[in-house]
Length: 397
Ligand code: PMT
Image (cartoon, protein in one colour):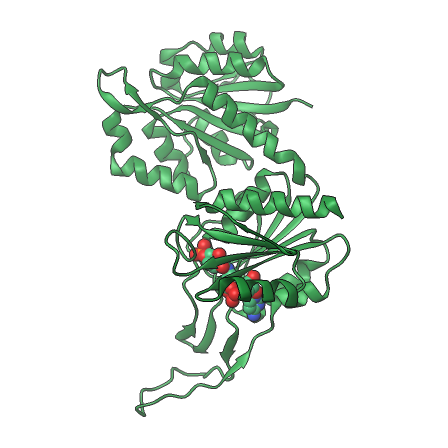
C-alpha cells in the first residue's frame, strides 16, 4: 500500500523547490497531499501542487465549501508522515510551541505520526539562538530535522539556511519507511532514566541518568514500526508521540510497571540506571540536622533485569545495559550471563562522549562470546543498532 505523505509548504522563497519534491515523490510509491500557509500561496499557486500531486491542495482552514468540516484532523489521521518544507523560522517556532493558527500548523499539532522539518531561511534568522533553540526542541520532541545547507541564499547572503537538496529530502523520507518495516507488529519494552529512592518527604537518592539513551531507543523502535512502551524514571524529556510512556519514581515502581508489561513484550531493553539499594525506612517528616553523622540503613532493590531474564519466554529477546567505571569487559560479560540477557551494552563513565546526559554514546556490545566495540554515535543511531541486532538474534533462533 502506498505511504501517505503530507507536505506542509511554508512561506519562503524555497517554496518553489517543494514543487520538485512533490513531483519526485509522486513518481515513487507515495500518495501526496499538500497543505500551504497563506504566505506560501504568495510564492507558489495551490494549483501547481494540485497538478503535481493529483490531489486537492489545502490552504484555507475556514473554507465553507468543503465537505469535511474537520479536514485538518482527517488529514492528520491520513498521514504516515508530515513534512514541513521549506520550514520557515516562524512556522518552526509555532509548531514547537503548539501554536496552531492555520491549516499547516493545526494539522501538524493534530498529527501523531512521523514528523519532519526541513528548515530554510536567511542565515541570520537560521543562526539566531531562538531558531536554534526551537530546532533543539523539535529534536527533543522526536521530529526529524533535515538540516539546512550552507550556500548562496536568495537574499544574497552566504551561509547556512539553504533548503537541503530535494534528493536529500526524498532520501530522508525513504529512510523513515525503510527502517519501519522490520519491527512491525513487535512490542518493545524499554526502561529509561534514573530512579529516585526517597529518604524523607523532601530528599531522595538518585543518579545522573537523563533518560536520553532510553528515549532514543524508544524513538528508533517507533520509527521501525514497533509498538513501544517506555517505563521512565524522572527526566526532563517530553513524552514521545506514539509511545506509551509510564512515568515512575522508584525502582520498586519500575519493577511493578515492567512486570505488568513483560508478558506482551518481544524485545526488552533496560537502559535505566536503577538504584541497587533504597533506604530501609522513609521518614514521615523531614529528617532534622542533629548529630554530626547520619546513618542510613539501605536495603536491596529488586533486580528488574534479572527478573526479566529469569522469566524470559521463547519469543523474547533481552538487552541489558552496564555502566562501568573499571573492568568493563569482565563486569559486562558477568552481567550478560548472570541476568540471562541475549545482549549487553556496556558504557564506561570515563569515556568522553559516553554515558550520562550526552547526546552520543560509546559502547561495547556483548552478544554470546562476541564483543564488538562500536564507534562514537548518537544515542538514536545506537538505538537502531541495538534493535537491528536484537532482530538478527531473534531471526537466527
Ligand atoms: O540516561 P542517559 O543520561 O542517556 O544515560 C544512559 C545510561 C548511562 C544510563 C545508559 O547508557 C546505561 O548505561 N544504563 C544502565 C546503567 C546502570 O545502572 O547499569 P548497571 O550496571 O548498574 O545495571 C545493569 C543492568 O541492570 C541495566 O540494564 C539496569 O537497567 C539493570 N538493573 C540494575 C539494577 C536493578 N536493580 N535493576 C535493573 O534492572
